[in-house]
Length: 223
Image: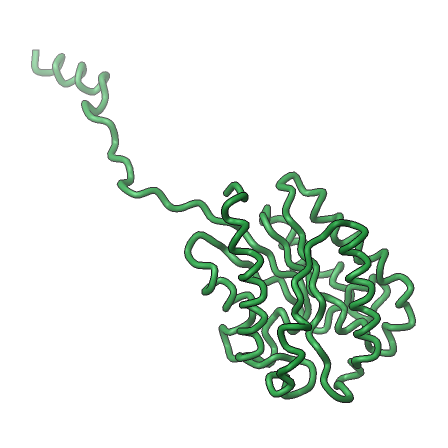
């Protein structure tokens, strides 16, 4: 009889359901920051890149992925195209709700600028590669950070102004929202000590500019 009772209990399984977590993890809005060394965080203190500071400003309901790679170009024919990077594949794979693209600074270098006529088309293709994802993210394009004085590393303001014209044209023709990183820093050359890379304070202004346009999206995005 005792053996029979044990068998019946075993067959019935647990008499109570497994305990459920008392608090479910909040859904996250996923943001991907695409870019070069400025996005990666060169010039800022460790852990203080603009994407890192953006995460702090947005709070616990947001995940921000830093997919910046130093020295990379938007141009496919540039010396170091972003297109070839694992970071680009990673940016596509995280199913982002929001994509922030800030490329073009390294494209102003002489060896890359000779392909300037292809900049608009390459940028449009990069944007479309994210828009075509099943998750249908909102894609922001950025006016790149200013280049004070004579610039550095072959990067220069004259060509950057043309990059900004391409970005504005793309935004208008493709109905894309803009984050103006150039305006955020144009009055603060002291935050660009090497005339290209924002320091921690400069990255903070960039993060603030991005946060101001992203925070209102929480009302419309679906985690």
